[in-house]
Amino acid sequence: MSRFRRGGMTGDPRAGFRDQKDKESAVPQGLIKAARKSGQLNLSGRGLSEVPVSVWRINVDTPEEAHSNVQFDASDRWWEQTDLLKLFLSSNKLQSLPDDLMLLPALVVLDVHDNLLSELPGAIGELVNLQKLNISHNKLKFLPPELVQLQNLKSLLVQQNQLEKIPEALGQLAVLEELDLSNNCLQNISGCIGGLTHLSRLNLSNNKLKALPAEISSLKSLRQLDCTSNLLEDVPASLAGMDSLEQLYLKQNKLTFLPELPNCKLLKELHVGNNQINTLGPQHLSHLSCLSILDLRDNKLKSLPDEIALLKGLERLDLTNNDLGSLPSSLANLQNLKSLQLEGNPLRGIRRDLLSKGTQELLKYLRGRLPVPDPKSEKGEAPAVTGMTLPSDALVNTHAIATLKTLDYSDKQAPAIPDTVFNAVGSSLITIVNFSKNQLMEVPARNNFLASLPDELEALTRLQSVILSFNRFKTFPDVLYRIPTLETILISTNQIGSIDPLQLIKLPKLSTLDLRNNDLLQIPPTLGNCESLRSLNLEGNPFRNPRAAILAKGTAAVLEYLRSRLPN
Image 1 (cartoon, helix red, strand yellow):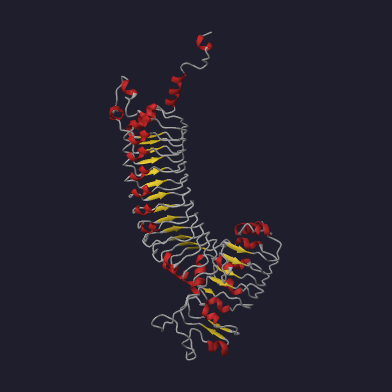
Image 2 (image 1 turned 30 degrees about the vertical axis):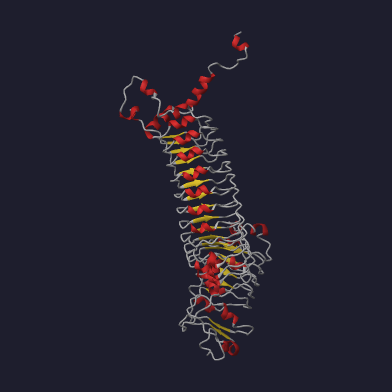
């Protein structure tokens, strides 16, 4: 028996050579050869635990083909190779990078994200031409001070690591434009960050930050700041000086008030949801004329100021899960508002069915609450009604209400009937209503005792919405079947016993039909053929089918169920 085996050596004495050969074989020579021409090498997702030496020495060693006695055509001139400029090593199993890294001084991009790196070698400072470094999704607990030597670095991505602090030297990366430190363990940010004067995007989200340094105001080029999911109770007043800021994310912190941002006149998005903000004042809104998105969801707001109307460019306003009991009518002046989210607020005076109809319907309602200016008033203000006011000059003719039982608000060219008109009625009995020569798109919503509608309603050729809830209809009004422009019919809480689906199908634009809380004993299967319906509400009726479990699945499921019951 060999003395080596007796001594305990059981492995192959050539194993070391074989391991190196295996590492080299993990990178096909064709890739290396192509990289010499293109200046780019992608070894991502190859299960590498180490990078073959030939990769680090690609610009140093003479290629194997140079030793072969062969003829070269124009495309195989190895001596005209390009320095490696881009190296991608992401999604491997690398635990470290060797000092041989310095043999690639021409690198512009180095991507080693999604590995097992616990530290970076100081040799990384030799990559003086590096412009983008992606070391995210590793196990780094600190960054080497040699990073300061990367004076051409524009993008540094370090998210999803285990950093507890950043080196002071980081603030000397003079041309850095993008810095992502999200999803680490940072408890504070050094004031050195104020030196990054070219930074346009800074992501500090998902850390443990309790404060931001005042020096952050020096980032005059910053357009996006993300501090989501930290422990911030306040933001420095100096934040207001960041006049290039376009997007500010402060969601999921512990803020109790909205920061005042008088100089952030380019701000387009402000996200402060999931905080403890309880006050919103004019001073918070007056300078944000460019704002298009305001996210205030999951706070403790009890009211909105009328100055919300100053946000003329606002397109999305999220007020979900606050303590709002009312809304300012001035919201209706936000002409660009496309999405208004109000779920989870104890709103009074606004019916739930109105909230469910969407932003535009709600804005129409609020528009109807706006004071209507008197066209005869030079200042556009409605004159006060006094004992000397002539009936023809008042907003509402109270004499006609009292003596003729007539409510007349005609010839106003108004898009909606203001609340003041209805309030003037008081407890008076009204038998005639005249809203002619206006620009009404819907019948005003009021709780009444209507049992029928006049056929003349058919003449409203632009009518889109009709709200007849909380009345005394025993049959579905036939005239509604003859108004093809209708998109919304809300007729819940009446006594309707049946509907005619064949007639409803003739309403090609009908998308919302609310028949809740009526006396429907059956739902005709033919209703399933009303393909334009997007919202069908049938709860609270005495029919047995469809069952509650199907209704709970929503409109599409109900229509599908009804179609399944049609005879073949």
